[in-house]
Amino acid sequence: MMTAAAAREWWAALRRPHAAAYDNQHGIGSVARLALFAPLLLAGAILLCAAIGFAVTQVSEARLEAAQHASLQRALGEFHAEFGDVDAPDDAQLRRIARRAGLGDLRFDADPAGDRQIQSLHDPRGRIVGWFSWDAAGALTSAMNKLWGGLAALALLLAMCGLFALRASQRLALSLGRSSEAVQKLHSQDLLTGLPNHRAMLEKLNEAVSRRRSGMVIFTRIDLDGFREVNDALGRAGGDAVLTNIAEHLRAGLPAEAVLGRFEEDEFAVIMAADGAGAAAELSEALRAALLRPIFVDRMWQITGGIGVAQAPEDGVSAEEIARRAGLALRAAKREGRGRTRSFAPQVESDYAERRFLLRELQSAIALQSFDVHYQPIVAAGGSAVVGVEALLRWTHATRGPIAPAVFIPLAEQSGLMSQLGEIVLRRALADGARWPSLSMAVNLSPVQIRDRWLVDLVRAVIAETGIASSRVVLEVTEGILIDNAQDARVRLEALRELGVRIALDDFGSGYSSLSYLQTFPFDQLKIDRAFVASLGTSPNVGAIIQSIVTLGHALGMKVLAEGVESDEQRVLLRLAGCDEMQGYLFGRPVPAAEIDKAVTAPARSAAG
Image (cartoon, rainbow, N blue to C red):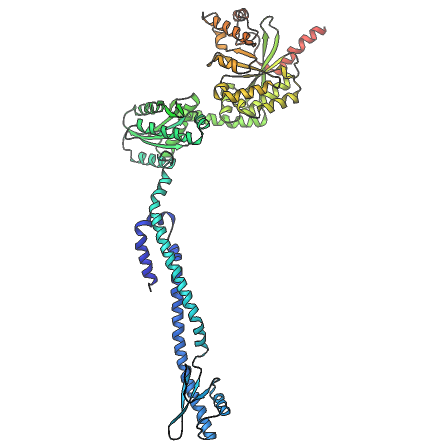
């Protein structure tokens, strides 16, 4: 039988080429190998113990046999001394001899047979006249005879289990050896594109920075713009196909020495060592050119992406620092719009720190509702009477002072706080507006709010809580909501109109200003962008454009409001163009609700006087 040491050596030689690496990575050591050999070791131990027991039994039985023979001789001697020579003892005499000899199963036969111990009986002339016999096995031998078969069967079973375990372990070792490379790939490779994954790219970046002796190491992160729209349109499988195409385009468009990887879900990264000062710009241009290549999956897709660039040693000396700063540059590029590129600069990091500070303060301000709502008058074009107000959110920080809406509104939209902020404005504005029954109340809705499926329920609840007439509520939206998801926006706006509120299209003329929007969406009012009003009297074509907008709006049954009016000349020209309402510093700046209270109650006091 194979010894334990030989078995271990054979097993080690068998599995060494296939599974040594797996053992090192996954901790299959001496304890695990001992567990595999345990059945064989136990079987060997059982057999060894049985053999020792058998030897001890044989020695014990030999001693017992000699003692029994001597005891019988003494008993016969005593019997002969007492009764003389007997040729064949009868039963009573045999029992007497057995009792004296201490043998419980003593017999006397002329021809003994079987496995019993025997001793001859001689007559006076020395002839054998018969044989005494007794049971040859002692208690220990009897027990061993009963156990021996069971022990042998158990040892055989354990040996078979051990051999089976060794065979199974051999197959497992071979399988693990073949799959170790696959495990390594899963550890460092993106399954979809086959590119190095996030972990592998950081390791490669660290290696590139460590090996650098001169020149620079450029690290670029590319985040695809609006890729959620692709997944929404094509589903997960279609989105994966587009990502695979983008990876192929990027790989084909990069220099041979550049390393491309997939950094996040829809984000790629590039590592490249270079010597020239313009290498980063050339790399960014190559990436933009690769992204411009159209992709055909179900239809043609034109994907753009924001690009953030950082380089060693200028922007950092460790992989973590360079990757983080490339990420900061990427965020800055994404904030500037689609398809933008930004290289890291100290200002980028300070801007990020400022944004983080403002975000924390904004969250606190929303929790405490520490905002003010000011109201700017809206006047009738014919007589300059105030017919409504527009609610405008104001935030005065405890240490920074007033913070412009152009700063904190985009921050709220990007950080998912806009719905909470919009609810604060809506509740405050409609509560104040309920006190001014002669004025309409205009409230701006962010595209983020329009996408919120709870918006209609919120507006309905706030109107009911404040008691304001829904016909006096004007909700202003921009063209951005129409571009993002036109079908959802239309459904949401129609549901709002069913509440009795009016819908105004704000900043008309500043974006695409597609005429199809005016036919498709339920607008009650157009607000001409202030850029047109500011150019009145200085640009010969602006007057004609404003006239056309007014005519179009009236033809579609909409009121037209011009915002940003700051001079009497603009007021006159807008009135001549047919505008229904106007808004701007000429008529009043945004003021707290208390000022509107005074303006509303003053005419009432004058009439009473």
